[in-house]
Length: 136
Image: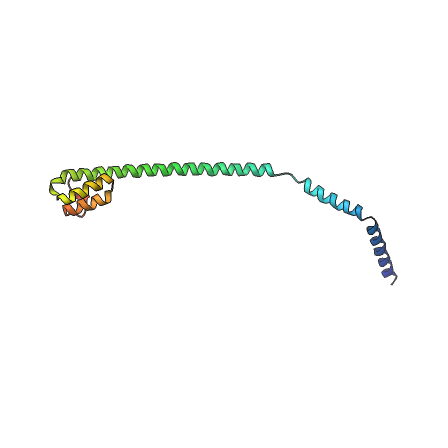
């Protein structure tokens, strides 16, 4: 029982002391939190540098991808022009064998650059399934 009274007395005196000098304890707590917050190293500049590096790398990848895309487009256009020239050559050689109605359709398709339509019209007019097997 005496121990209980001693503990009770200690806590009541401590409570009275804290009630009387609470500003001191608040100052200590604020000082501790402030030192924790403000002594941390500021990493903003590092974050900006890393994001800039990542942005430059992404931009480089986009530029490379764009160059590859442009090369593929140029290659496809050149292949298309070669195909049109080949069809025009076949058409000019076999022009006499083709009916007038098909000639107009083939010429219009070749002018518009429609290799698929020109191939179909040439194949139908010459009664062949594969224009590659025709003697050029």
